[in-house]
Image (cartoon, rainbow over all chains, first blue to last red; front, side, top):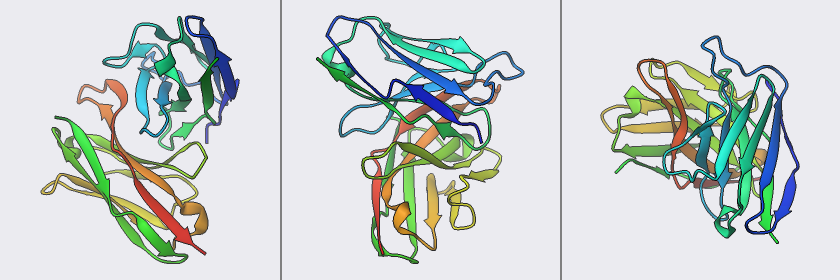
Length: 112
Length: 122
């Protein structure tokens, strides 16, 4: 199975400041079609997960443009250009490249 | 409106069985890839199972041989049969649509239900 490792596991950010979360996979997530099969999800407190980014860098419908995803192969990053209070929650990366999907451990974002 | 509604969770003794249901509206479960993801209390997300458009099924190692995913196009429902339950299966179980279109383009798990809670007592 592909192991997904996120860092940091928690971060506290002042509103308006940027934030960055790293995700590393134990195997390359680059598909033969040229796309990196890496998704980012946010689970806000008391809510179901929601899709933020698919295929490493594509924002899902309705996701603010302050969220961006980048990376290729085994190293990926989620960036929030200016954190807002509504961004609190736990962020997960996930690989759907192999039939047995795997999630990272999650990164908890808090507001200072 | 596109949505998923899970049900069927509850309290069950170790070794028992439950069947979870996920009713879809606004799209067809048979025309999509569907997934179950769970979250144990205070823990992270864990993928459990997929059923592909063509009917193929996949399971996490932790549930292989005990859980079975299926679907019913007449009810537009995805099911997860949970057998031989263990305490470590206690979790909120979420159903989601894994969006692959017919051209092979992938758009992520873009629709999620509200979850149904399974509590296994040892």
